[in-house]
Length: 390
Ligand SMILES: Cc1ncc(COP(=O)(O)O)c(C=O)c1O
Image (cartoon, helix red, strand yellow):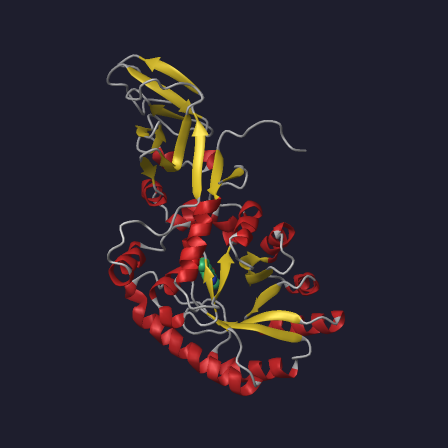
């Protein structure tokens, strides 16, 4: 049953920002390069069900998820029946039947899944749509070089039941120049596999290997498709990647070409005057040094606003930074609003994102909480409503 109550906070997704990002990303690849939008981790916290149709509107027709359960959500929310869903990680052999029936593509990186895919496809008279993942040096999942020849041959013989939609790998950490040599070595391995696959299969499969960082910094490794996660949401994979853009692509640019899609907002729940010398909240964590105006905001560690932000975090009210005073509670924080003129109950509070002239960036929130930006995003609870603007 749909609730009639508004939740204490919500995530606002900016449609125009997303359209801008997709256009920018398209402009950085050759014509015809396919972008697969990576929406694992609940679309990096943006919410698969809200985000996927927005990305479709922006021109995306291929999505990458981690698991069969995410693929199911993606399938339910796609508007375009031609939109493709690809599972890059976890699918149990007994879930392959569902994937094959529904035309869901999936990675193939071990023998057991290979045999199960062939058997299931035979049984259902429908081809399995696979992306063959080869090991090139990431050492996570993928067929070892010693097995390539045999696997390509098995796939050739099973071509009635298995359609090779892609041959792929994943570069290990292109967001840092420290990994440059390793990635070059991986690419050499990939080229070797492409050559062998083409010879044995009799055609050259579509190739994909790059995520956001490799896409933005290694244009020679785009191949036929790229799997873009963090950049589509408006974030650079690392400072190095952004510096690369400024220095080598557009030294004149002042504006960041990527626009943040997400803003996390709440509101002031109540306001109180505190006398100097009083403690605020639990225990003796914060002692008011002078008379203060404080506000309570209905977000807490249950919503992902961690206890480590006690006395150190800040939010925006009226475009001005307000520090957290006292302990972060399960559902509430108290903030110092003494310096905000005319502050009142119901005023908007921004936890991550822009308000008027100031912004709490994901990076600064990540630094405050000692988390990677990917981590902050994917930990945003799925229970916070996602609202679309623009
Ligand atoms: C296999 C694979 N491809 C693509 C991506 C997207 O990476 P990014 O968000 O850095 O673009 C990931 C993310 O971890 C991944 O595991």
